[in-house]
Picture 1: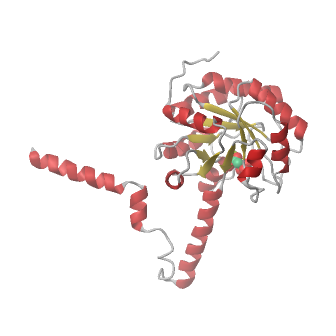
Picture 2: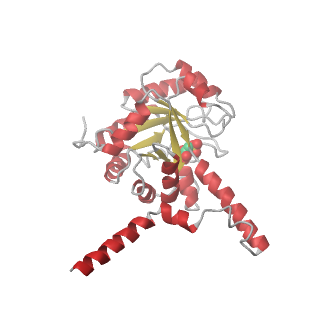
Picture 3: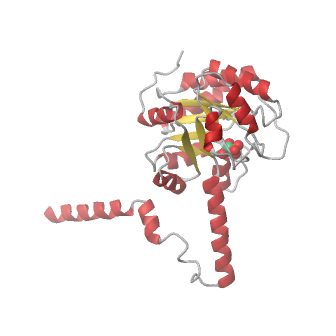
Length: 301
Ligand code: SPV
Ligand code: MG
C-alpha cells in the first residue's frame, strides 16, 4: 500500500515506456550536466547516472564516499539540463529500508525518473573492484524494494532491482531466486550484473528468465557482444555505463599532455571542441536573445 499519493510525471512515464517496451533500448552514462547534454544530443532517450563515473568526476571512489544527498545534487544538475529521463544508480540504497524510503521521496522530488538498487551491503564497492563482495540478505533486500515502491511520489517511477549474484560467485540459481524475489517484491525491472569477459552469464540467465519483466544488461567487461546476442537471450535494455567518462579521461589526458610537452596549442586546437560548441551546449543563444528582448522592452517603456 503506497504511503504517499503518487502523481503522474512525464519523465517517469517516458522512462517506464522506454524500459518496458519490448524493443531494445539503450541508456547512456552521464556524470554531469555537459555529458548529459551530449548524450541527449547523440539521440539517447534516457540516461544512466552512474555511481562509478559521478564518484570519479568528484575524484572519489565508487564506494559510497559520496553521500546520497551529494549524489542527488549532482544528478539533479543533469536532470535540470536535459529533457530525457534519468535512471539513477542508487548503489545498495544508502542504508536500510528507512533511509532508502526517504531517498526515494527526495529523488522523486528532484526529477529523477527511476532508480536502480543492487543487492550488496552498505557501504558498497564497485562490482569490478578486486575484492570479495557480499550479497545482502534476500529478504531484507526484497523489503527495501517494497519500501522504495511504497515511497515513490510519482506514478511511473521505476525501481530497478540489480542482482550481484554472478559478481559474488553465487551463480545462476541464486541469480534466478533473487531476481524472482525482487520482482515479487515489486521491482519494475531486473538488472543482472556480470564481470565476465564474455556474455555467457547474461545469455544463460536471459534464457532461463521467464518473468514478463524487463531485463537489463551492462556490457562493460564483455564489450565485444553485439546487441542482437543479448536481445536473442531476452535482454531488453542495455546500459553503456561508463563510456562518456572513459572517453573524456582519454581525451583530456592526450590534450593536456600535448599542451604540456609542446607549449603550444597549435597542434591540438582543431581537434578539440570550440568555444562556440560550449556556448551551444549551454544555450548561450537563449540568453543573448532574452537580453535583446529585455533591452527592447526597456526602450519601449
Ligand atoms: C555504475 O556505472 O556505477 C554501475 C555499473 O554500477 S558498474 O560499474 O558496471 O557496476
Ligand atoms: Mg554503480
